Amino acid sequence: MPRSKRAKLVSLTKVSKKTREHKNAMMNELQVNVDKWRYCWLFEVGSMRNTHLKTVRNLWKDSARIFFGRGAVMAKALGTTEAEEHAKGIHQLAKQIKGQVGLLFTDTEPSEVIQWFADFKQPDFGRAGNIATRTIILPAGPVMQRHSDPPEPFPHNEDPQLRKLGLSTTLNRGVPTLSGPQKICTEGKPLTSEQTQILKLIGERLVTFRVGLLARWDSETGEIQQYESSLSSQEKEEGDEEEEQMMSE
Image (cartoon, rainbow, N blue to C red; front, side):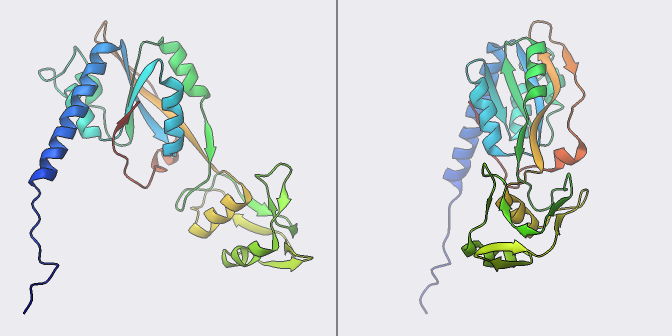
């Protein structure tokens, strides 16, 4: 009987070695930045979207360094005890690295950092499971694409897709049309996959990407300043479904 092609022995030696070396490289990079910048900020993200996080990185690339993800690696690099800490007092920050958080290293004055992140908000489309922040009702008449300026009705070839997603449309002179108002979602209730697709098609953004500052370490004093995050518990839960590896810019 021929040997099954599935019955293969795969050595994980090279994979493990590569992973360990990669983690060590990231830890070394973090420690280099601890030594380079005056402040280290711990932040969390609401309604996580990789695209918007990259925007933050690009806007700060000349005056800061940002790390996000792989919390265990970040905590270990900083040191979670006084005996293990890489710099004076930073273990108090490392102990707070839990969940979807990141680190921002910069010399920018705290007041400017606080104001910048308070002003930075990026609306985005909701995902299945997100809680609707408002009730959306489409009026009777042509179904409009609101993200266009000015809004335009959907073309006739989109009608089957709209009906498949739950809209009670009919073609009126080649335009998908509702005979009466139709509720798409209800404030305070989780969004379904179909609802999120409809909302995206019509251009309704129900979530907002924001960054909440949690704590700041000062290399000159070794002291930690705590901050009360501006994010709601719901925003914290609305994270990216895909696990993101730690990246820095």
